[in-house]
Length: 52
Image 1 (cartoon, rainbow, N blue to C red):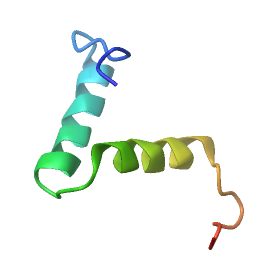
Image 2 (cartoon, rainbow, N blue to C red; image 1 turned 90 degrees about the vertical axis):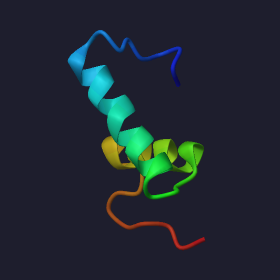
Image 3 (cartoon, rainbow, N blue to C red; image 1 turned 45 degrees about the horizontal axis):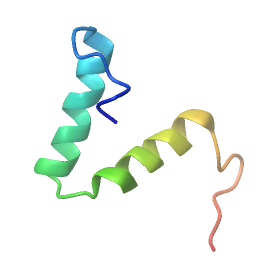
């Protein structure tokens, strides 16, 4: 993930900050968190989430 983020850009730094918060404070697996955010952004499960 760090290969794709330019932390000198405020948007990328924000993304890194909320991912770090999820991992460090909420104890969420980094890969699972990024996958869920990615799915949400692209609407991968629209209109109905998969139950499988």
